[in-house]
Amino acid sequence: MAENKNSLPVESEIAKQLRKIAGDLWGKTDTAPVAAEPKPKKEKPKKVVVDQPVIGIGNLWKTADETIDWTDALSHSRPSDGLADARLWRFFHEKAAAVLAGDLKAYAEVLKISNPLGELTEFADDIRIQPVGAERLESRFTAKAEYLEKKPRAYCAAVSIRIARDLFACLPVEEVAVQALSDGKEIMNVTYRRDQLLHRNFSFLDPEAFAEECGAEYSI
Figure 1 (tube, rainbow, N blue to C red):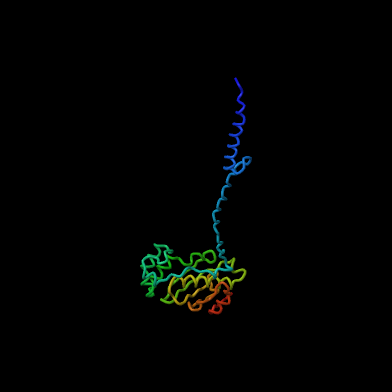
Figure 2: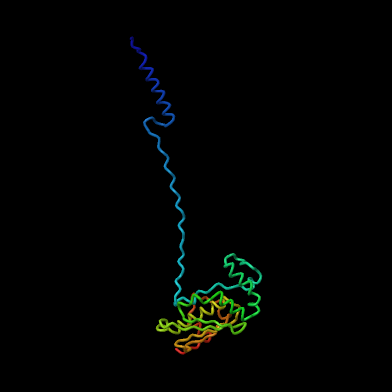
């Protein structure tokens, strides 16, 4: 068979055309296409954990329960802020008129259900509360021996202030009397008035000095 002298140039021309097409597509025929790098994954925002201060005898008086707004409870059968426990709020709503009228039976029922001093059993024993008038509550506790060993007056003052703050938050009384006992004997008594606690910065308050300012008497 006769050799086709024009075959190689034709193939060469085709190869040139293919290389030209490839160059148009990729820019350079000797460079492979670069794969797109994956976008970095967005990290989920880390939850910010706010450490709650540990409550101890050294800062016990600095915190207190949320104040119950009895006028709001009277007006609304459901919590207006949407945060309070619905069942407990219904109870407050049912008792609000009697509480605002100074009914001692209603006071006693509210104290039993809400248990405002339940958090203090770590710091004091046999805590009792008694409504004695529309404007006055009385409370007493038995001091724990381990706390009396170091700073007995500061300890009694700290517990008594916290008791007063929680009871003022619970019921619309004007004064709270607190008595501390040890071995069945009174070692401290003080009466706090609501107006004495208003506008106080409890974060910087000296509990012993404040208790004395409010007329605290000690036998220790």
